Amino acid sequence: MLSKKIQKFYGKLEARFLINLNAREAAEKAKRPLLDLGKYDISDWETHISQHVVGSNATFLGKTLMELKWREKYGVNIAFIKRGDLVILPPKREEIIFPADEIGVIATDEQLSKFQPVLESSRPEAYTASTSKVEDVGLQRLVVDEHFRVKGMTIHDSGIREKTDGLVIRVEREDQHFINPSSDTMLQWGDVIWLVGNKQKIQALKDA
Image 1 (tube, rainbow, N blue to C red):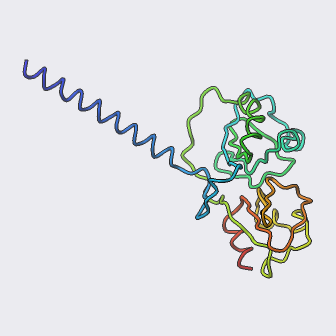
Image 2: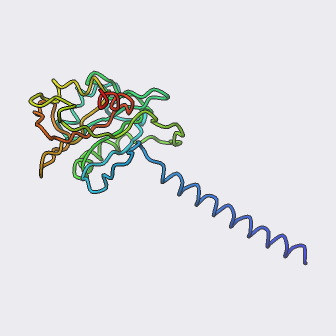
Image 3: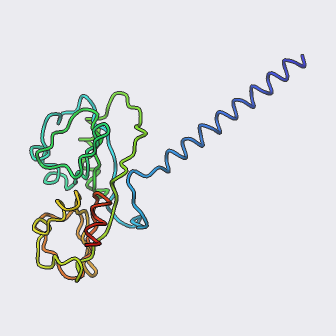
């Protein structure tokens, strides 16, 4: 009788330990950042960066980003495509979406809501979260000043994308801000440019 009570006690103890362990693992997993946001607090932005896995039954498989026209239709930007250990940053318009790709979507709540049916149509049947990290991707800011002389240039002509493997997701100008600005947006003195890109290349551009 005593042996059965002891076994029951340790059984409960083991169950409680496993529950606590799973809870801690879930909490740690939830805290892992998708991207390295560094010291910047963007919690008050409408814009979010979310990561989604492309399923094998997605209707847009084999199509290029230019063909899909997601930016034109939904206002969203694809910041990166993670394919195994390869990170395509930023993806060009000619880039094709494949099954199991992990795509980084930059959008407001409203834009993501409109884009959600597209994402849900590509939800994989079964998916195990990848433990690898997008280590070289980060959110950084640049200021148009005497050091970064792109005043009067468009985002396209400034070469920011090519120099940083980056994507401009926001431009702040006095009391205005532009989310996912188009490539023909003219840059002005004092503009604060936020971009997702290669951390080392962005830092090199800032130090140049």
